[in-house]
Image 1 (cartoon, rainbow, N blue to C red):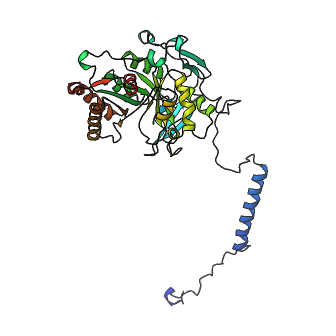
Image 2 (image 1 turned 180 degrees about the horizontal axis):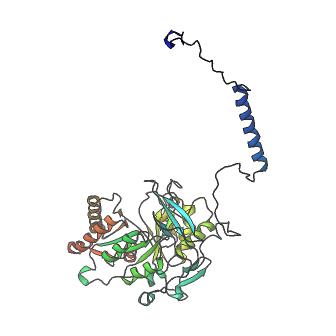
Image 3 (image 1 turned 180 degrees about the vertical axis):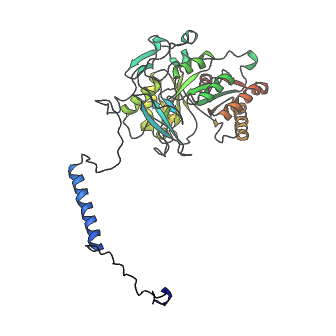
Length: 396
């Protein structure tokens, strides 16, 4: 009788399991794997066609014989104006140049695109009648520049929009108001064209898209227009006015070439308006050649009043350049309350001195406040006049 399983000692008949034995030790396995890795990497380096060793790369198509020097890269006569690239817009067209404008106070950046050559739509025949007089144009490598005609006609006179004042208003206090920065924001420009009265002078940024058409529309509404010239501020390049900025570090010839590029962007204007320029306008050596170029072309100079160190007035006086400086920057603090207060100060200055000049930027809130103010100011015995009439009043 077989013994009862319960009587058999535990583990008596249990077969022992054999332990699995590896032919080599674990350290040898690790060393072998590392060795194979080194051999593999070495073979890849020797055989792979990758001179950058796996570094990330980006591939972009470029045109052969790309233009490298700054002068040749500038838009040729007839090129389109630069435009502001906004989020969500399509890629700039081939052949364009993109430059970033930096606002030193806020750090905000805007990409300005200077497009290459392309055909443009035919202008409105009604606006075309206001095209610049060929007798007042001079061809340059940048395009047409204003000039004094052979008969002695000056663009500042030819394109002026003087008001014929009634007898009871001839001696009334006068205010000339310049709104600058037009053309960059389509909305603000449209608001200004629709809501600001004709005596308000428009200063256009030279980087605007469709600039010629905007200037013609402004002139069709009897606004006098000016072109803004970006000039070097003290904190340049942290505060960057944009392409073709006039710089104290450049020679007189280089700055004149840049100024001519700026003046060729549009036609039919009465003068040049400064933009920023606290460092440039403080240098007589830098300002002298630029102002002589402006005067030689029969234009006026308007200074926005932003810098207290400017020598523009002294230099302009020494060369008989018609010059006017803003007495008050209307939207130095761009809130409705402060804008209204600045306009009130402008009225007080006009009543005290007989005439006063203000400057404002093309911000939607600023345009709205000025439009409302302009409707009421005649009732207070003050006449709004274009900038050329302010120049006469200042010089008389």
